[in-house]
Image (tube, rainbow, N blue to C red; front, side, top):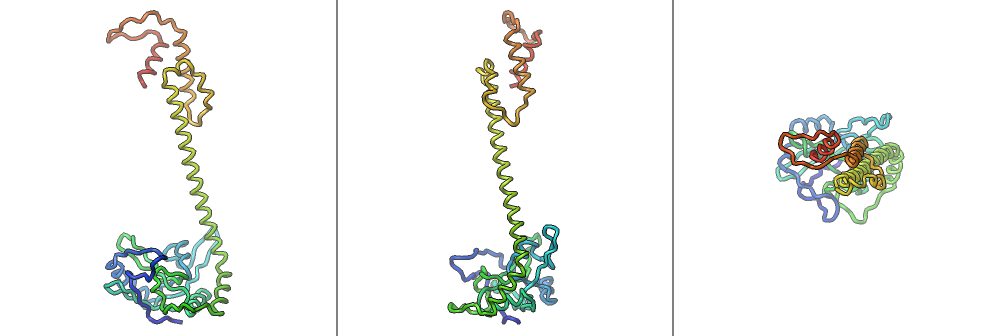
Amino acid sequence: MKTDIIRYNLTERGRTYRGKPRNFDIPSIVAAINSGPCQEKVKHRDMLGYYGHWPRVKFGMNPAEGGVVDGKAVRVEPAIVTTYLKALDDGTIEHQEEFLDNDAGRLAYNLYKSKAGGFSSAIDEYKRNGPEFYGFDYVLEPNYSTNRGYDIALDSALTLDAVEAIEAYQEHIGGMARLLDSVMSDRNNVDAAYRDALKALATVSAENETYISLLTRNKTLDSVASLESVGSPLLVDRSGLSALERNIKSFKTADLGRFEPLDDEAKPTDKTVSNVLDSITRR
């Protein structure tokens, strides 16, 4: 179950409204595809592809046999293998795919025979030593509509074989898909909790600013008790507030006498006055 050699160009997606525009560094992608390590992978039939991109999304660009989710081993079943691959200087990619004789491979092949879906490449553009090409997956709506391996017939429809293969394989991967949905849901919950925490932190900061503002106003010296009517903040140093309150009360009842000009060497002898003046000068 092999395709003919498929040709498409990285600068021509064959789409106007759907999909994502790509601005590849063509010389770098061409060099990566024609490199020794990439061609050796093709030669040894190690460049495997999957039905859909989700195995790579979940387990990385090279998911191998699968991975562990919530303590359970999840098997990843490849659907295709790339048997020929070449890149031309103008960005044209040539490749040939073989559908594997398993559930995933039969599903992809039946879709291919029915002229539905197409191939979609897996490329990591941002590797430190340059881009890396991992192969192709079979997807229902390829970003490059030119990467299908058949001419699109507007009157084509899924055959009975394709429908039966889809139903069988959907039952096979249903558990794994639910696990993926669960993981994404957990991530959304974490993101929501993080946003709530930031909102709470902003509220607390605003409350503290209000208290600081009240304490620094002159009229507050005569009405410290009014702070209690504002509501107790979440992050207030109560010991510092209590000390200021005591100093204010002591200042009101202290026998200050007359104010005399002080020279540079003079220092207040009354401890209460000293504490209050120190608090004021520190601000």
